[in-house]
Structure formats: structure tokens, C-alpha cells
Amino acid sequence: MTATQILLLIAAYFIVLILISYVTGKEDSNDAFFKANKSAPWYLVAFGMIGASLSGVTFISVPGAVEAKQFGYLQVVFGYFFGYLIIAYVLLPIYYKLNLTSIYTYLRDRFGNVSYKTGATAFLVSRIVGAAFRLFLVAKVLQLLVFNQFNIPFTITVIITIALIWLYTFRGGIKTIIFTDTLQTLFMLISVVVTIVFLASAMDLNTFSEVYTSVSESPMSKVFFFDDFNDSQYFIKSFLAGMFITITMTGLDQDMMQKNLTCKNLKEAQKNMISFSVVLIFVNILFLVLGLLLTQYASQHGISAKKDDLFPTIAMLPEIGILTSSFFLLGLIAAAYSSADSALTSLTTSFCIDIIELDKKPFNAQKRIRKQVHILVSLVLIVVIILFDAIFKDVSVIWELFKAAGYTYGPLLGLFALGIFTKRQLKDKLVWVIALVAPILSYFLNTYSVDLLNGYQIGFEILIINGILTYLGLILISRKQN
Image 1 (tube, one colour):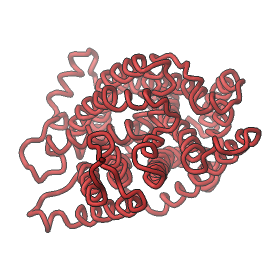
Image 2: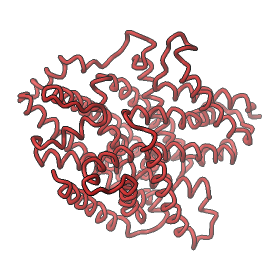
Image 3: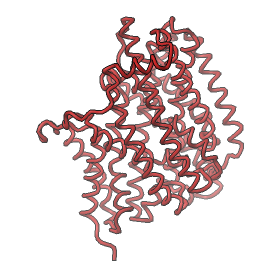
Image 4: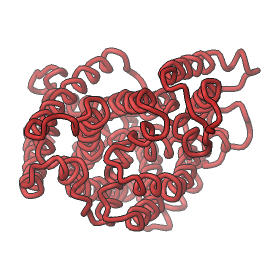
């Protein structure tokens, strides 16, 4: 595909999203923006959450990591499933009982205002970093495929990327996103299937059984790692990390929970969560199969691309054909924007509700303030993505994303765990200190773990360690409730 063809495809795609925004955003109210008037169909929420959960990072990085990590990522995915069960039957009942718009309001009611602000700030940092990682990856791909051809700087690419999101979310917010996520998830899944079909045909794997045999007999399809406890991919470590990643990055994340809280009632929200968690396992298997076939195809054709460059490089080869290349681009853009648009909305929601307490502002100024915050958050994302371009070069972004999550979501895990599973009260004024010290200690422990722990290599479980350190620190500044 030429750069001009790619631009036309992107333009057509966003015209569709803007039309959806126009239809769903006619009611430009804060209630529609924040909660979709609590009238969203659970099945649309469930399907759309697939795309939001996977994002452009999964779309590019999971297939690209198969050569080095085999199918070990599936151990993390199995942990996801049990994490979603905890969200459905422990966290969602709490959120619905309290009728929350921002889930961090729970911390204010349970512990006090400083705990509330600390939790909300932890989310804001976490989601800004996470959204920036996802958009950084997609912006790099678009820069490589399109904007370099027109000598457009990466900074302009990033601005355009964020501006397009703002354009179709500034009115309808979460109400619009529920519908755009559904469309984007569909594009993403079609893209993966089309690419797998092409690769199988190109390698003379003409039936499902031939594809299955090729995948199952490859050493890269190894799923379970039980040999070396010190290995970062050891099963127990990966499984538990996956479970806690889900609890924090979904259950304690305003972005993902805001979608669930748009369902009509708790029962529908739970149906959404369980159905989504089952489908997600099979979708991730598709991505891993895709990664294996991409790696085999690259080996057969002398293609040297690795990691995050593998899928984009092969997908845009002339011999792939314009149809497969088009679906790759649609899938990539859909995967990226289905995550990023909801992140922009949830960041706006949390900042409005939790930080500046929008409900306490004059009623006639609330909508204007919300729109100003929406623009401010967009500008922050632009700055952070540009910084990432200077920091991260030859890396697999999904692993960097999970590392970052381990440090930023740990304080949320500790705070909610203490609130839900104990009756202790905190010295509220000191909570921010614990939330700052625990990630710092976790970082040093992770950095020197091989020397301090006799060769033990910390992986994704840094999130659990960070949460435990936060929890223990909070215990030190707490007392039993009278």
C-alpha cells in the first residue's frame, strides 16, 4: 500500500467514528459523558472491552514476542480469567452498591480524603503511562508507514493521533466509546483472522488440522514453564501476576470499570465480565498463533524484523496484498484507539470527579470545565508520548507496559485490599507517603533481585510485591476500628 492509500483508509475509518460520535453524542450532558445514563447493553460492553483490554500493544507486541517467549504469555492470560472472577463477585458488588461514578470515591468513604486523592492520583499516573505506551507504539507504526513518506515529524504524528481521539469523544464520552469500541473490536478480530488465513495459505497450510499440527509441533508453542523457579516465566509467577494485573488494571482502574458501571444493574455487569473473560482467552490464543506463523514466515523468507517490528513489516509487504495490508492497518488502528479513547475519557472523568470535585462547582460551569479538562488531558498525553520516543527504542512494549503497571498500580492494590478485607482505619494524612515509598522499594528490589535473592529474577509479580509492601506500610499507620 502507498502512503496515500493508507491515509485515505485512515480518513475513511475516522469518518465512520465521527458519525457514530455525532449520533451518540447528541445528549451532551455530564451524565451521558461519565456513565452513559447507565443504560448500556451488557453484551455491547463485553464485546467492546475485548478491544479495550488488548489494545495496540497486544496487537503488535504479543505476536512479536513469540520467538523469544514462546506461548508463555498464555500463562498470564489464564491468570487473567481468575482475576476477572474476583472483579465480578467482589469488586463490582461494592461499586454498584455505592452507586459510584468514580470508583476511587470508595476510598474517601472508607478512609478519608487523602486516601481518596492518593488513589485517584495513582490511577491518573498509571493510566497516563499506560495510554501513552499504547499510543506511542501505534504512532511509531504510522510514522514508519505513512508520515515519514511526507517528511512529517513524529511530534506532529502524535498530535494528529491524539486530536483524532478528542474529536470523536469530546461530546459523548463513554456513551460514544461503548459503540466505537464494538466496531473497533470487530475490525481488530477480522484483521487477525485474515492475516492468519493468508500466512497459512502462503506456507501451504491449507486446512485447520495442518495449521494446528504446524503450531503444536513447533518449539515456540510451549505454554507452561515449570523448570526454573528463578525464571521470570515460571508458571506460578506468571499465573499470579496475570491475576493481579487483571484485578488492578481492570478492577481498580477507572477506565475499565467506567464501562462496566454503564450497565443497567449488577447482574448485567457480571454477565458482561464473565462472558468477556472467557472470550478473551481464545482471542489471545489467536494472537499467539499469529505470532508463531509470522515468525515462521519471516524465517522462510529471510525477513530480519523482530519483536514489535515483525507484524507491521510482514503485513505491509507487497506480496501480502492490499486486502490483508488494509485489514492489518484497520486492526492496528482499531486496537489502539479502542483502548486510548476510553483512557482519555476515564482520565477526564477521574480528574473531574476526584481531583477538582466537579460536582461542587457551579452547575452552569460544569460542562465547560469538563471540556477544558478533556483538552488538558490530551495535551499531557502528547507530551508523555514524545518523551517515550526519547526513552524507549529496541523494546517489546507490552513487557515495558506491564513493568510500569507493577509500580503504578501497586498502591491501589494495597489500599483497596486493606479497605475490603479488614476493618482497620488509617492515619489518612500519611497514606501518600506509603504510596510513594512502596513503589520505590519495589524498584530497588526488582533491580537487585538476582543478587539479593540468590539468582531469583522478578517478573510481572513485581505488582504483587508492590501491593504487599503498600499493604504492610498501611498496616503500620492504621488502627483497629472501635
